[in-house]
Amino acid sequence: MTGTRRILAARVILIAVGVIGLAVGVRTLLDTQRTDQVVGVAVFLLLAILVHDAILSPVVFAAGLLLRKAGRRMPPGALVIVQAGVVVMAVMTLVVVPEIRARAIGNENPTILIADYAPRLALMWVATAVATAVIAALYARTRRQKDRPSVSQH
Image 1 (spheres, one colour):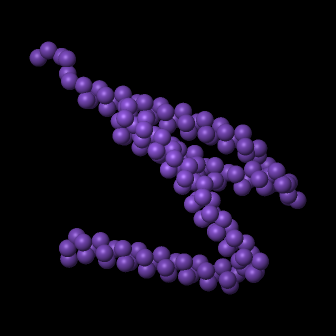
Image 2 (cartoon, helix red, strand yellow):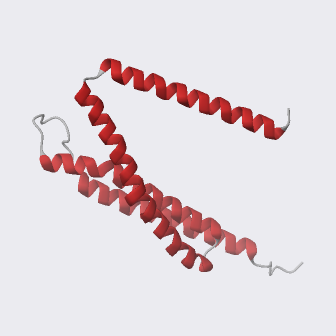
Image 3 (cartoon, helix red, strand yellow):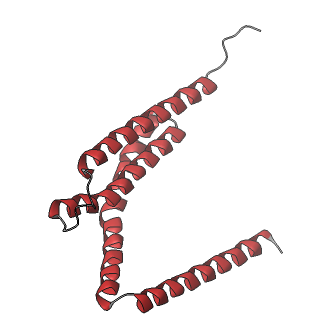
């Protein structure tokens, strides 16, 4: 079997496993949940797609464009590191914002949503930005040292 045929076979198998997994999940959801809960899950999934396509993707795309313009002054590897940091921060934001909103609305159970999520998200942004900047700078510095001709005398 050639490499191309193996890749095609692997793709077909992975797609089949994915479709079967989705079918089992939908069947389980329909068998175990009330109609209003199923509608809630459907609304959540639609909103997740909408938020991803309308907010996350354009923000990451715009950040990528800005970074590429700055990338003329930094190695491509450092640019990829910074882009990964932007993606991590965007995904963290999408995960935490619902908790911030839910906490602001309030709930009847005092044992859930007990943390102050907004400052923690801001701290995580700062930590991610600092870590990303340090790693990108170290990478850029290492690249520059490797690209320079040796000045040692042999």
